[in-house]
Amino acid sequence: MKAEYMRGECPALMKAYVEAYGCTLNFGEAREIEDLLLGKGWDIVHDPEDSDLTVLATCVVIDTTERAMLKRVRELSCTKHLVVTGCMATACRAKAAKAAPNAQFVAPGDLSSFLKLMDAWPSSKACGSKIRESFGIVPIATGCNGSCSYCITKLARGDLKSRPSNAILEAVRKESSERPKEIQMTAQDTAAYGTDIGTDLPSLVHQICSVPQDFRLRVGMMNPRSALPIKDRLAEMYLERKVFKFLHLPVQSGSDKMLEGMGREYSLNDFISIVKCVRDRVPRVTLSTDLIVGYPGESEDDHRRNLAVVADLRPDIVNVTRFSSRPGTRAALASNPVVGWKAKDRSREITELRFEVAEERNREWVGELVSALATEQGKKMSTILRNDEYKQLVVPEVLPLGSYSTVEVVDATPTYLLGKRVER
Image 1: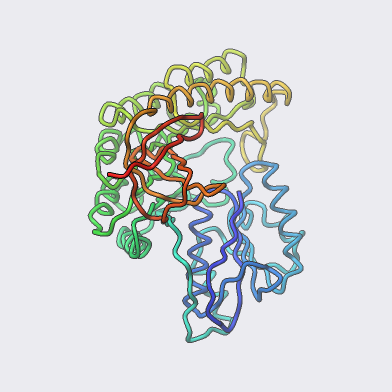
Image 2: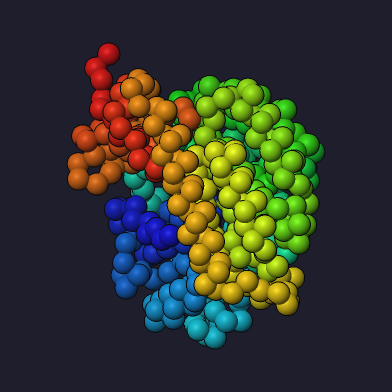
């Protein structure tokens, strides 16, 4: 996934181009870099060839992504000055440095080092401008407490480092100051937030919901290992009016044998208990989960257990990823790989099932009236909105972003609902 940040129109002494890939945390950190530049009077441009500085926030979560990042590093190496950040800056730095020998590197989330780098550049007393989007991204932590055997992101970002709650609250106030919008709270593992600074995620969310501005909060991905000890308070957290009823809880495998090999430190029953706890309090919560297919040693029985998780728990969203060996991880040393064609077949079978389940879940909404927030412009003069359960609704008209509408759900697909606006 790629985003080019194209805000800023007032004349500034220097011009910067910022490009980000990968997870929401990467995008949030890229925006923070952009804000630092704007505060120093830089202008943000949409073409790297028109910039004095190019910042590339990279992702290396799987092998194909790493290759794409190296290609992009090479392409941008001819710009005036290139700064590489994101996970490649630490996990695959030598490869990136070979692709762009003159590039400078900043570890993911290390804003203080980026500021020191900027001290060598001239700044302007004028403040850069930016157009506020219909959603904001607020990183709350980087790193994690886990030790998953396949994860290169842990190698890149290290142990959990939570941000102070006062800094997060100020970021939420800033992001929601102009109009109603979606705030995406992000981290590698949001459920682990605060365990290193004497607090926790539910406490933070309750503080955020006391901010008086009108916004909706989407809580990002959480590891079942971290969510399990606080599951009751997590369920209560979702009762907050401002919190989208959206639970992103990756199971990764329906087999306890596979979970142990992955180093996930929870069982399938642990995962199920968290889902049940939240669903008991919020029955229509949107459940998003992840599955890794073709992990070394995965048997046909393990695959059937993955299918059973989808069929029995009926998640609204399943992100299916074929295992990719990453250098420096324990899984890279495994001697019992699953052959590519078999992993592909298993991935296809799970994908077919998850779309079938998702469409059935979405059709339960047909005929209902819901209140929804316009979050982005769609294709062909349409608008994408989100209801309280974070269901994606598409209406065939252009609506002001940040506005609320009453929408009747008239049809459903596996990935979104179709609706028409109703005057109330």
